[in-house]
Length: 112
Length: 113
Image 1: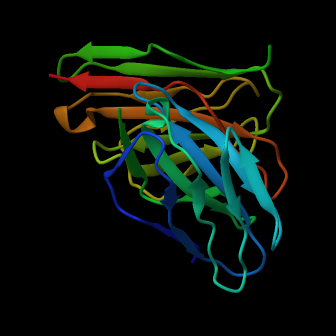
Image 2: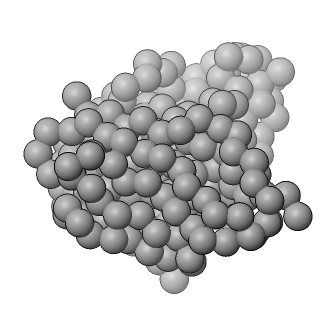
């Protein structure tokens, strides 16, 4: 079945550092890929998405490129801020009846 | 404004009580979902629905039940709460398209004493 593997946290960075959170997936066919963010005490918010190979999703300075050859969708940001501290989830939609398959989440901590 | 709502946001109850967690969406979505989120942040799908009068069990076995009498409403019920039910519960909805993203409510933090 479909699966998503993302790097385990917590990931701790200093403000203005470069961020990469790795995400790889296993799926049959051509899934859509997503990154969600969860701030403390809140639900998940869609951060960005990509629906086909080589698509780049971007939002709020974050980017991720759908790489079919490496089955990856790594999240990047050039300069993180304290306000980016949150839990980030990589997910895929393979078109199955029960919707999205999520990774286990990566807790990101940005220190001033 | 189209949105998805959950009430209550926080609930502390004693063992053996019956509780219902409410979820409503005004986006006109057919599909709705309930997730249980453990302290390690991992999400577990416990119930989902394709539309009115449709309910299915998810990947994680749960003692809770759900109903879908109206498109916009997808409540989750625990007949007899136990401390093992203490968790964060997240409701989500999506359109019927095969690859569409889900939209999440703010969650209900349940504590059973």
